[in-house]
Length: 287
Ligand SMILES: C[S@@+](CC[C@H](N)C(=O)[O-])C[C@H]1O[C@@H](n2cnc3c(N)ncnc32)[C@H](O)[C@@H]1O
Image (cartoon, rainbow, N blue to C red; front, top):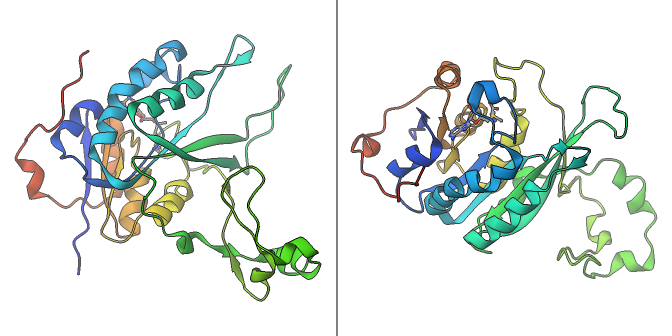
């Protein structure tokens, strides 16, 4: 039986990651502190300072991620002074300059978001899950996230037009060629890039957890058993908990001791010899 390691570490991820070698992780999946959020618990970064705060950390993520690995960033811009702040758009551009490819954007549709009323907008019911890679040849297991064909089998697939029996490329250039007739008689299809997942109500003593199903979907899509998953802003350990259940090794980092304690309650750590020797691999960031 393979030993699955699940390690949680307390500290600033920019510092802790110095203990890890280049090209080590297969997947980074994380939800960082959103700008101006929860200033009392873990600092709160002003939207205007967000990119500058994030870049030294993503520099470490780039270093420790394998060339075939994927980085999933779950984040959502806030409203400042009546309009959406642009810090995430600026972050995407800055990450591209740092060397990342912005490969895809998934939308997490929060199926059960609570009702509310705002004077000039509707409730937020979705967040971004931005996908970044170091190279176009990243590891991906699309079969692992196939979904039941569902209503398509009785509706669309029963009424095919002449364009549905030939392959042609997407008009938006997403590279998605289609020949819908190929799907007749199959019971599973590939999902879209919209994930319809409810938030979880057992908030696990952390005010900003994501549902287990979110890291689970990306871990299945981008890793295989025995691979290494990193969550550098792990909160109460959702990513590590799921990674362990799926037979992936994981490392979770959080700056708040109390969250690391919560994470450790639900996972089963296995000591790892490699990192007892505290070699520093990356460059320390200037504070
Ligand atoms: C949005 S929460 C993540 C919640 C997590 N996805 C979960 O399900 O529990 C962001 C986390 O980042 C942590 N954090 C903030 N700054 C950090 C830093 N520099 N390094 C590591 N963790 C940090 C916070 O303490 C917080 O728990």
